Amino acid sequence: MVGVHDGRRSRSRFIGDGSDGPDADGSSHDAPGEQPTAAGPRLYVVAARLPVDFHPVEGWRRAPGGLVSALEPTLNETTAWFGETRPGQPCPPVRIGRCGLIELPVTANDHELAHDGFCNRTLWPALHGIGGNVEEQGAWWDAWRRRTAVAAEVVARHTARDAVVWVHDYHYFGLATPLRRLRPDLRIGLSCHTPIVDEVLAELTNSRELARGIVDFELITVQTERDRDGLLRWLDRRRSPADGRPAVIANPVGFDVERWIRRRTDDVVLSLAERHRAPAGVLIVGVDRIDYTKGLLHKLHAIEVLLASGRVAPDDVRFVQIAVPSRTSIPLYAYLGRQMKETAERINADFPRSDGRPVVTMVDEQLAPRQVAGLMRAADIALVTPARDGMNLVALEFAVLNGDRPCELILGHGAGAAEYIGRWCRLVDGTDVNGIADAIGDSIDTGRDEATADRARQRADAASVLTVERWSRTFLDTVSRSRDVVSGVRAGM
Ligand code: G6P
Image: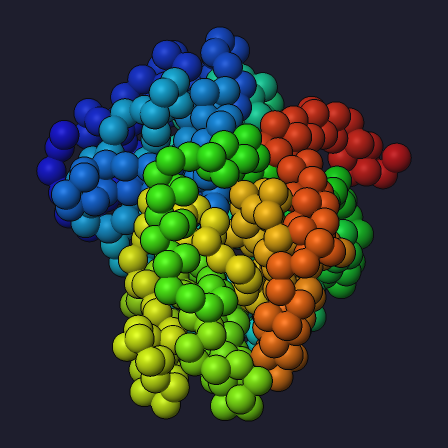
């Protein structure tokens, strides 16, 4: 391993040796524009982050997060994964299985401006339709364009001829244009993991340029039909007719269904579940990254309203919320974290339980998947109530894990998951505190009856369709076919 990043990175490194190394297909073409080889497998992933994360005690480990879980089963088919590491981390491993890891270089300053600034303070709230949280700065946009251009050069240099480049999420919305200029042979597709709410997106200062860049992808997949409509409406408003129009399909992200079914009988999961279940009363759980899109404060307020109304007594209910801090350098996120802590403390002080346990427990660390499963397996009710969310894999995982027992999933209709499993959930508006409180109260009243068990079974069946294999196969098959369609559109056919 080489030392810690010095914050002045400017060259790509083939990870592990600290230098530009061989291409992931074993060939070596150092300069963009040099003839790429046709050898080697065909799939390359580009994402904001590499799929590994550095832990001070455990060292490098699989990164937490939905995208990595979703793509993990396909890693062996993936030639290489391009992404950034977090500033200050040492050099990551060379590969995971057969998948090479190639770091996208960015200076610490550009990372802050482009990732924390443009991606997370401009695009993120805009995509979720939260206009009040959108902030814009010219320097963020400039850094984002610089970062995109550098990434295009690195990807162009390290990919085999005619390969498929699968770009994930909003961080590299602008990649297709410079990459296509350098490597017209590549098939470049984008999968959006966020919702696409056109109203706010269309009002961004650089909306037109963003839209004109995104149409250079041959294929864009989104989570739901609602997002497909949003994307097309945005493009229709902001691109010019000469820009062409990419193929856009709803292709919901997959997850490792089999693994979540196996966890139903996993000894570690079951003993953890036993422990979580121990105190009497209804157990409600939530699992989220701290983000204003997730409706976390609304959930806490709903619990408070329910307790204050007397419909449920503190001894009869516990709410355990995993709330992993994220983006803490952004003031709004840090503020939200503090508000949640204060709200939980207030509820616990106002509604003491006779056994001395808190009615609300906040867990602020990233737990291992089996620990999360242990908590989910114990839950009577899962509270997954984002105001808006791309898919929300927690909802799907909960559904599959618990298809064999009566339990309730209260789901925000703004989550993409609602389009796929909403029929078998209690749907709520994630911003409606009283509505969430009512849904919890109704679920507690209904209890573990036969109808609840039936719905849990059907919910699991519906979620089980969303496999990683189906997701990646649909993407790869469609991106292969989409070129002809798109060039036809571009040629005015
Ligand atoms: C969302 C995005 C992910 C991102 C994650 C954490 O889930 O869709 O791409 O990795 O938030 O955000 P961060 O900026 O910390 O990577």
